[in-house]
Image (cartoon, rainbow, N blue to C red; front, side, top):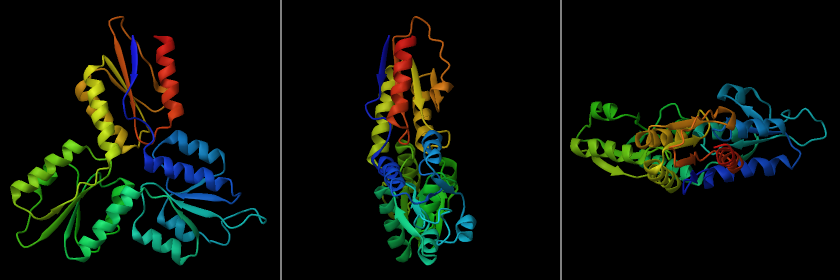
Length: 293
C-alpha cells in the first residue's frame, strides 16, 4: 500500500510567518497576547498557551485592558499584542493605537492587500462584494476596511438573489481561502446579471495550489485523509473537494481522531492538510499509516 502526501499541504507562507512571529516574541520575556487565535489550529494554539501566550477573545475584552498593566510581572516590560494572520477590522487597529499598546502586525500580506483594495475602491464609491464566509475573522476584517456599502456572499443562491443596480459600481473580492471553482461560478452569476465594476481574484496562490493538488490526489486515492483544525475554513474546503473525488475521505484534527479500517484492496492512501496544520502533525499521521497498515 502506498501512502502519498499531496504536492502542496500544511503551513502556508502567511500562517508560518504569523506563528514564527509569536514564537519570536515569546523569547523577549514579555507577556504576549494574540487578538483571537493566531491561526485556526487548536494544537498550535494549545502549544502557545503552554508557553504563556494569551488570547484576547473580543473587542470588549480589548477595550477593558490597560496597556500599562497587561503584565503581572513587575520586572517584565508591558505586554505585546500580536494581530493574527487573518487580520483585523480598522476599528480594532485604531483601538490598539489609541490605547498605546505595543503591537506586532502578523496579518498575512495577501490579506493586507485585500484591505488596501477594498479601502481604495469603497472610497471611490464602489459597493464591495466579498465572496466568503461572513462569520470568518478574515472576512470580518476585510469588511472592517470598507467605507461604504458592503455585502458578503457565500452561496450561489445568495448571488442569484443579489440585485444589481445598473447605476451602482461593484468591486468583487474573495476570502483568500475560498474554493476557487466556487468563486468563479459566483462571478459568472454576476456576469450574467450584467454588473458594472471590477473583479479581483484575491484567493491566494497557496490556496489554489492546495485545492488543485488535493483534488488530483483524491481522484487517484482509495482513501483520503484531510488534516486540520475544526474551525479552519481552508481545511473544510479541502475536505469538500476531496470528498467529491474520493468516497472514503476522513477529516481529522489530530492523530487521535484517526480511526481507520483499511481493506486489503486499498492501494493508495492520500494525505493533505490545511494551511494552518504544522508539519510535525502531518508527519505523525504519515508515519502512523505507513507503520500500521
